[in-house]
Image (cartoon, rainbow, N blue to C red; front, side):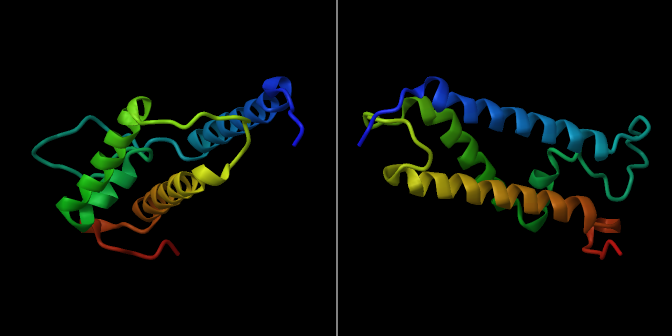
Length: 135
């Protein structure tokens, strides 16, 4: 197995992925602005009162059952604990190493779930938070 220096061969794709993600996020923010309305009136709340699109997945998660918020809290605690988790010595930098495939699959699954919940909350929720068709 030949060794390839991490710089620039590994960091160039990382920079490209970061740039692509940033451009995608900016495009989504322009296409789907936060649903901000007039100042809130506590005596007449809108129906449904949706949060901003980037928090809508949490609102959707809680709409199923209040116990489901623990899923988001456990994920947040795991992310917070990442610096203190034990790590193995990494010999070579590569994408999706065999010993990290389960973690990579978990991260991809969490990403897909968050995007799916955001889409449902944004397009498929109507009055009284009932499921509706967007067509």
